[in-house]
Amino acid sequence: MFLIPSEQKNKLQQQWSDLVQELAGSQKQSKEVWALFDRYYSEPQRSFHNLSHIQALLRHADEVRSHIHHFPVVALSIWLHDLVHDTRGNDNERKSAELASILLSRLEIDSSIILHVQQCILATARHEVPKRGIVAADLPLFLDLDMAIYGSAPDVYQQYSRAIRNEFRWLEAPLYRAGRIKVLKRFAEREELFFHPAMAAQYDAQARANLAWEIKKLTFF
Image 1: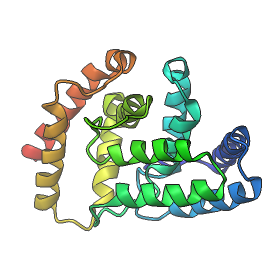
Image 2: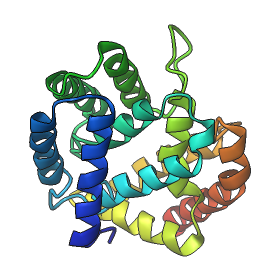
Image 3: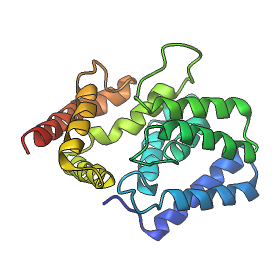
Image 4: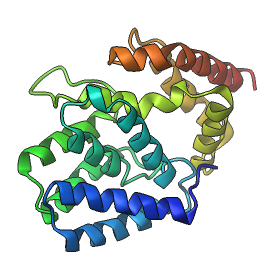
């Protein structure tokens, strides 16, 4: 499944430390939060939503850095958006956003940044841009980064599909297929899968092909 070797984990730890330092956050708390990241993202049920997912999103974010208004908000949202990942629950995003607020406060991060990060995390519940209120400038692009796996090469997407099934291995096949098809069709029927033009140009066509493949696979198993 999606895993990273120890040397890449060490690089990720350094990236996290550098980000906190850039924001003038507490280095002591930075180490404690990293230990929490390592524990949470190494949970045995995580076949996809682990540190390899964080690594991939950070890489994607760096590739489109010129389009990002406030990179630290995007980076923090990437690190914190999947902290809580219980496939038996239905409020992971809310719990992750709440935990993010606690951890970022301990790190002494500016409150306005914390609010934007929470907004980004909560938006991953349905991968939609909020229609009301002040929306964080980079929220749409952050959602696109989280969706990039849908536009990956077919072999990578098929591996992703297997990894997601493995995270729901406790769920009987008929129920899994019905639930997964519902999610996939909701995306497939959207007029816009990706909000930023650069992300749409790069990923939309392949994402729709991958969605069609998995829907067909789950329908005619």
